[in-house]
Image (cartoon, rainbow, N blue to C red):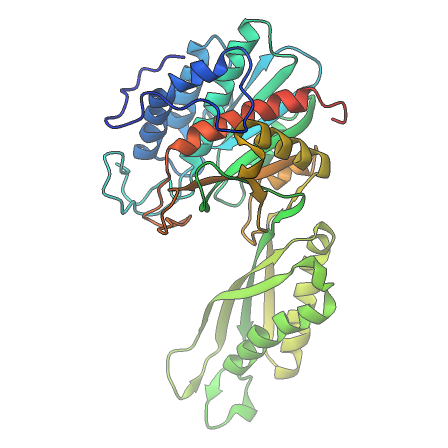
Length: 418
């Protein structure tokens, strides 16, 4: 592996070998990885310092493509140039891995040498780490392929636009990223776990995330005479309080449905009933079945609650992403691989998140699983949370992530169930 990027000052030039209880990587990959730590950190820091927002990941995608090409691989770019996928090895059946490339529209608040150089754009969700780990995975697997030790074909998918709606996963799928794929895997940074730990779970992993916009209208009037008009503020309050409560009685509690309002506005004057009011919120659901029926149910409940108030209502229900439901076999494979890579005691049960993740679109097509990659500083109580301007990681997580994904690729290729 070579890179044209300058190795960062203070980065680890050499990483330790397998942890106690871990199995060594095949083909001298432990030695290979240990001497490439600084190069991977350099790539991560370059991406972190040069973030690109959703659908504009042109330089990031080009960097990944160059590194893969230097290793002798043939990446396939999207026509727009903001995403790519690349096969390693040979075989009819493909095991895929996905990383996301985009950054968030947030200001980077850290005082570090690799601080974002782009105003109001920052890698505050760890996609720079995801990309670096998957690039490291590809370069490691290419070492095995060149020596005839890779028993099948692996595909790396570097996706644009995970952080926006509509997101980039459907675009990669339409471009053929899932052709011949038997199973797919991904990881996500998780600062609540220290670096060196992996969180795995079968079944619901993240929630579907949809948005709802409502607009109420009426003739308006004086607050002294609410009976002569439609009291829109009262109508809005009924919707805000009653609809989430009613959903709790109309949907199986095991579906994990949550409706929360984030924006409400109506009127300006204290003594005037406005003629228009709006509210916006999110609907998050862990069940695929409940998610499929949510638009019709939520829309009807809003209309039913508003009807007695005399106000007119328009409802906009907007699909976001489905829930991530980890396949049972895929979760078992990656849990076993993580145990082999780091030691069984370093694999813990992951919590369910009510956040959204468009990896779900891939899982609607093929079995697979997403895991949580610990990124916190071991022994520290300070947690730099996701989607915050001060988010950062313990960079040793990159090496752990590569180890886990190499073991996962080999285990999945050897699994007849896919």
